[in-house]
Length: 184
Image (cartoon, rainbow, N blue to C red; front, side, top):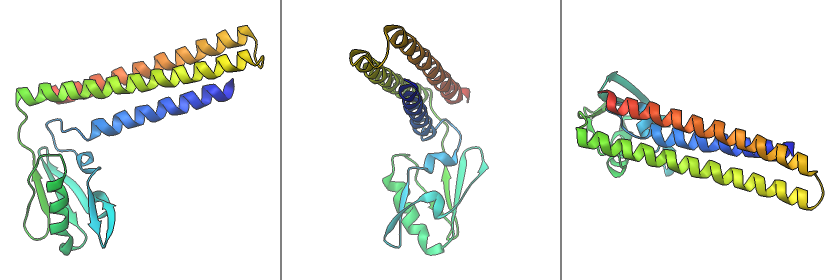
């Protein structure tokens, strides 16, 4: 039973990490280096994350500066940014690449809030699926007489408490991101 609980907890924690990762990729009005986490650049024939090609800094709230370690990488980095879905056109001065983020419109903010809510709902669904899987495992153990009915009820109760805790965390993460988007 303890194994089932630990496995369910581990999977639920991973679903929270996926949610945070997805939300980090959303532009919330200010420049955030995590927006570039999913961008991959062809580095000598090998795909490499952008943050391993150079330094990324935020000199101003609405600007990101990417300083590749090799100047010959600038066109490749620009190409990768253009292919990505962030919707920003890079500009360079031969040494660094600048990404300037425009002010978000009210309409765009509302779209982003809907997207955040979608990600939150997907995480809740994933957590509930993990709960269902754990409860099915517990029921199988009961059927095979590995555990008693009381142990089954206790285990299901613990799994439900774990599920409630993780769904509460999802709600907190979603509310925080929504507040961040609507802030400016």
